[in-house]
Length: 261
Image (cartoon, rainbow, N blue to C red; front, side, top):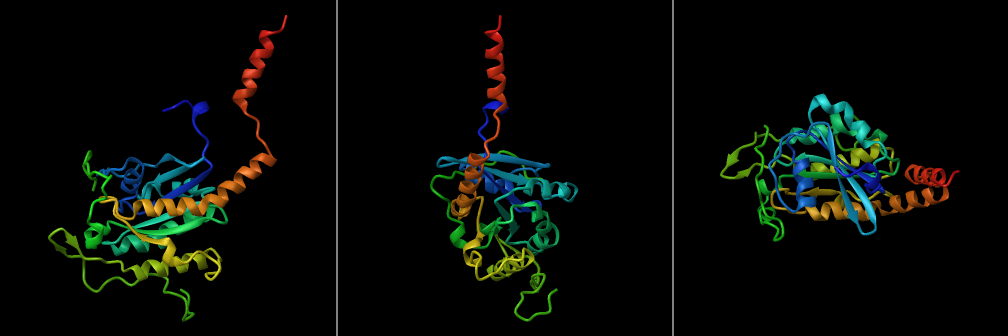
C-alpha cells in the first residue's frame, strides 16, 4: 500500500451496496482490471481509486453479509452515488435492496445519485453473453458460496410464480426490468424527491454482466458523468475554505529549525 502522504485524495465517493453473491466485487474487477474473477465474499469493505480525467473517484465495495450490515452506513457517508446491485436470477436479492440496504444510504449526500443494477445478465439474456473484446475471462479464486395510493408502485416486487430452473447454462430471469424501474420510483419517494425533476428511471436502471463485461463500462461512466457537478462544487468549497497541509507544515518547521542558531 502506498504511503498515506503520497496517496491521491478522492474528489468524490461511489459505493456499491447489495446482498452477498450478487457480483459487486466482480463488477469492480471487471471495470478496473478489465477481467472477470470468481471472488470470495467481501469482508467489511474495500475500495479502488479511479482516475477520471483530472478527477479522482473512490469506488467502495461493501460486504453483503448480514454480520457486516452495520458498516454500510459508514461506507455510504458522504457518497455522491450509490449502486444498488441485485442478481437478475434471484428475486430476493432485489427485495433485499429495499428491506436491508436502502436505509444505509441515509448518510449519503443529500443530492446522491442512485443506480439500480441487475448483474449476471449473461445467464438470462443472449445479447449479454457476448464477451467484450478487451475483457478476457480469468478465474483466480473459487466462489464462496405500503402505500395505499394507486399511483405508487407496491412496497415490494412480486415474486415469480415459478421457481428458478436450470436449463443448460441459462437460468430463469426472476427480476423483470419493470421491477427495477418500480424500485427506483420508490427510492425517490423514500428520499422525498420529485420524480418529474429527478433523473429518469430508464437512465438509472441497468442490467450488466461482470463475466462478459456487458454494460459495465456504460454503468460506471454514466455515473461518473453525473457526479461531475458534485466534484466541481466540492473543489470550489475547498478553494473558498482551504485546509492546512500537515505534511507541508511539518516540512516548513524542519526547515525553520535547521536555520536556527
